Amino acid sequence: MNERFVKHATFVVERTYSASPERVYQAWADPIAKAKWFSKPEIFDFRVGGREFSRGGPPEGPIFTFDASYLELVPEQRIVYTYTLDSGSTRVSVSITTVELIKVEGGTKLVFTEQGAFFDGHDTPEIREHGTGLMLDGLGKLFEEESGA
Image 1 (cartoon, rainbow, N blue to C red):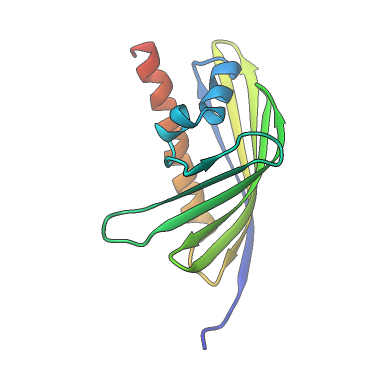
Image 2 (cartoon, helix red, strand yellow):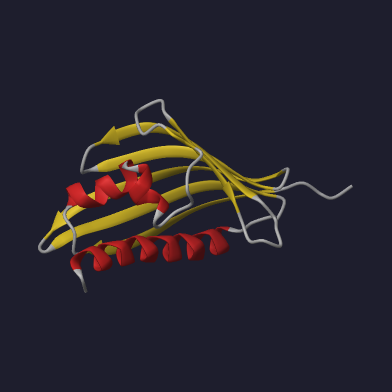
């Protein structure tokens, strides 16, 4: 039997976008907009107590399952949710995430803080932080495309 362990970690990823806090919030709150920079949700209920659920992955596998519950929503300012991430039938992590939207000159500073429990070495905080950075870069590309940059 493999040894079981949990690695706890917190990481913060920041990005500044040349889009208003309203527009950045909307990119999280609208399932069509979110599918352009995140996975396409099978369930999307963006409200306190609501759920977001999606599955996907590369053609050669594995299938990743993202299952989130929204805990706090302050329009144009804050999004807080918990989520589990599974790889196939293996739970790889459980996290709480806070997305802060701060109005700055010319746009929005986004501060993404994730506090996670990573299980049995199936994922690491370093890999998740890197992936989060790529995800938030994808969000930035959405705003660049909209502005024609």
